[in-house]
Image (tube, rainbow, N blue to C red; front, side):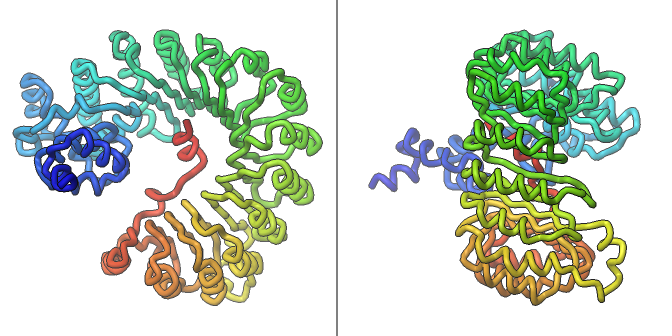
Length: 519
């Protein structure tokens, strides 16, 4: 009887408590919409509370948003040659903007850009800017009750510069509507823009204004700019800031006293920063705990100083990785670092290892074996030397062989993520890996096989038929020119075993992606 009432919608409170468990399972939420009207009314708000975070190729939800704009705006759209009446939804059942709870401004602008193509000519840019500003105005008009606002600046290419310009205009728009920012519970900043860019000073000024206005900053990521970071840390966030991500920061220019003033700081992440002896001395002598959750390195400073840091903060460490570059000339120092991490850091969950194929692989294998709580593992095993002679089938990539014949023996029963970025894989070695790891379920498995043998039959036999993964990406340049997701017959075959084949770029989790998910 109770089950019948839930299905019919007679117990909406209980039904909602059940449905909200599927908050991030979008395919299930879509199915819930089709059950009946009551379920539809409960599932729709969950689907629309964070639409810009969904990695999809279909951005038609932007056009649904546009329907909620006023008639004057729609007339302007119809005057554009880029859009016509047929592309606008004639009616909508819900006020979709009112459901918005989480908004990353960069993702919002990127979604509009993707929805209407990547044209860079001036009329297209003006058109996209018009849509972005109008939709954001609609969010403000609806007085959306945002749980989280993320302001995100990137610098990599001209497209990002255009997106940054629009993001900057939106930030200016927010400053003119202060009530919008005051009602936001969580403010997060990700600033990876090069401070040498001509408009960086404008961005810096507006970001500081936002922080000062909101006065409830929770999380910041700053790339390669100690002065901006210093300013942000002093902007009324001593009792609100709980997460700091330092990215390529030179700690020579940072005032360490700020750590004493941050009262609720719970999570510190260091990504490829310049660490000197002064840094270690200052951190070790702090009166407060230094809750180092992430440490990613491109060079190893004095090993004794690292040991002192790990003695103090190693039990907090959850994420570790290195990328020393090809030809790193002090592997003994790296092996000492492995020993320290193994000794003091017992709770590593995310491991990112970039190893030169020309160096001894056994210390790396032993290091991975000692990590007992892994959820995420990335191994890049490439070298310039081996790639340069990749046409030579006689070349023996011994490290790849050793890795594959040993790795599967000590993987945990379940991995959230495994990415193998390797070269010249031989079928026999890969089959050994799959057999040894047959008791491990991997939620997301990514394989990049440069110039190796055809491993797809092995994957079908030991992965697909045994349903050992949920998401799969294979870039095998030997057997199908790189991208399995383009081969619809193979995609359908894996789908019949409930395995979703996706592109490498859509599944790969780099360090910065992972950091964004951390609260």
